[in-house]
Image (cartoon, rainbow, N blue to C red; front, side, top):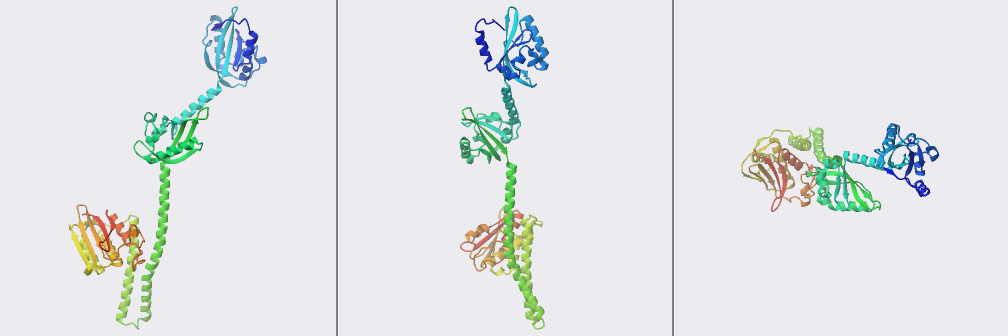
Length: 486
């Protein structure tokens, strides 16, 4: 583009160019600098005194472009045409200190008496390039982040949804942009969103806030959320940036650790209760055995045969009691470790109940009611121990008459043992089948190890059944066990 040479106001024009906020440079047809304003000095590092009179190519043209510069200048002088004249372009320029930086320039060409001169306004756009590079870098980070990065307007509509969000929540960007985050928020946590937004607007940081979100497939996941405001030049919040990180694995680990800690505390509690109970229950038969054995040894010759048999019978009885306690502890340890041995086969539960009643010596005060005579599928020894504990429990804590009932349906056999004692206090019912627990009720309160019903439930569940308690109307207790039908 060629322009006429100004004929008036040259002094005023010089003042304007000198005070311009952009670098202004003029060169002649030989490429020699003829004008160099104050902003050019600041932009390129060369003073006017050093720049004027030197070839422009040696001052601000990077080495790799100098041949092109020379050829383009020669061609324009010859033809009056060139690709850069009259256009706004971005290109690299050279600073006096040797580093390159991006500039935006506009070149105009003037002809006077057949002689060309060239004039350029040049603007340093390093800040613009830095901002663009930063945006590109941030965009790359967002694009490849493993975290979900979401932007939303103040009205709640989502404006961006990165691949990390797609992977985390299962929704694609096309499904979520223009929608609200309500889709991934559990119903019971909807008020939480407004609370977090209020905190952000009040200037309070929201960093690593732990909560739950819902994925497209319905799964709930634990996430850690950080929310940051995006403000405009006036300082008003224009958008919100949310980063969500999946912490499900960590939270599961924490919950497992808490569960393990709780179980450890429960085990410590059980240990303390076991020591307290066992110290009494084990000491009593041991004391009796020791006492009668000592008496026998010391007075053997003075005791008659009847006294000796009585003493030996007591020792045998207390030893049997001690054996039952040890057996109960061993069985319970196997039940809790889920290592209950045995082979399941057909068991006539009603017949087994009759044998247990005879073994305990209460057959004459026990009634038997059998409905739907069918065998259960279980380990016979386990069924025997279940019935022994149930009937023994009724004998120890209840009152006669005792009733054993058995009924069968298509899937299971249910056996129950009832008594007509005081029953179980309602407040203790939830703890009946816990380990080392005893109801403070009646004259027998505090006796026994508190293992019997825990063993009953454990063996029943090991066989695929269960155990429960029912009040025996109008008075007493009823304990029931279900076992798979053979």
